[in-house]
Length: 357
Image 1 (cartoon, rainbow, N blue to C red):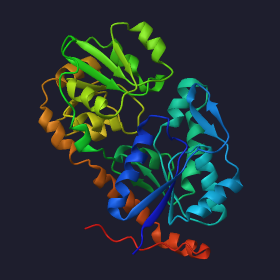
Image 2 (cartoon, rainbow, N blue to C red):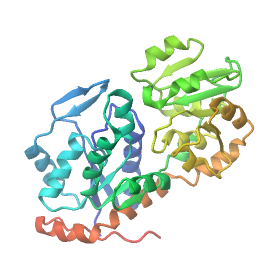
Image 3 (tube, one colour):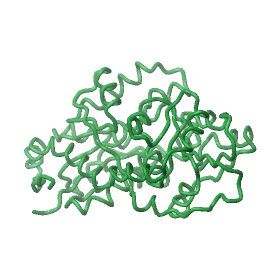
Image 4 (cartoon, rainbow, N blue to C red):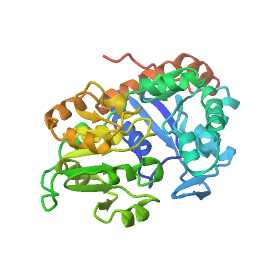
């Protein structure tokens, strides 16, 4: 049959540490089990500058000819554009110019993030994003709530893509990392930036200890403002798994995240979740019995202490990487017929994607 090759264009890539990068890396690792190969077109190898207010994020400036050369060397059977940055726009332009279908993904609420920093009307930002995404065959989103929201804003062909995590890895954590701290231990794992609303967690009236894992432009200010909180910086691998497992409640203070992959990570480690009752955490947690949603974040965090850790692990097991990969491929399959017709002009006809068992 041959392997089905998907090119994913993304401006978010290592050394960045965020939900988009983790999702894409996990997807690529899972793909071979489904007779799929995922290849990436990233900012690597292109001239770049630091993004304003996010110096760790580089904005690449790829030349169209170099984009075309990379694509034609990879000979993909399908295109997926993960981000709306310069790399994503360049691949979008290539696909439109050559009448090659593609899908996109709406990972980030850029209109809200931009409005938090500069006086840019949300309506203008959404108009730009709508034009970007509607040129493709489908826009993937993580939740039904976000799908409905984007449809109301004029986005067409919105497709839901179930997210997943490596449940076995996150459930392998060891207890006891915070035995030296006052209990209970409340944990937040996030990019330390204004849009993550970490200050709401740090301001909450909570007993015990508060821990923040992650780095970002707001870390110094928050660390100075809340000296009693413990800022551990970026952590990964077994150390991160141990951190999740050693905490008592995971607090997710964001009001704007489209999903919140860290919520699934926490649940896989058996950690109950406290969050505001907003899209993202509400889509994940509502009806699960694994978290508490309340406009009073401190109240939610204290109430979550009584939730069974085993219940959290059982719920997270339904959100595996295999399930996420199958959902992604189902969305890609919707454009396969047109994709093959267009690709035949280039000699890139794709092997058939077999139905999932």
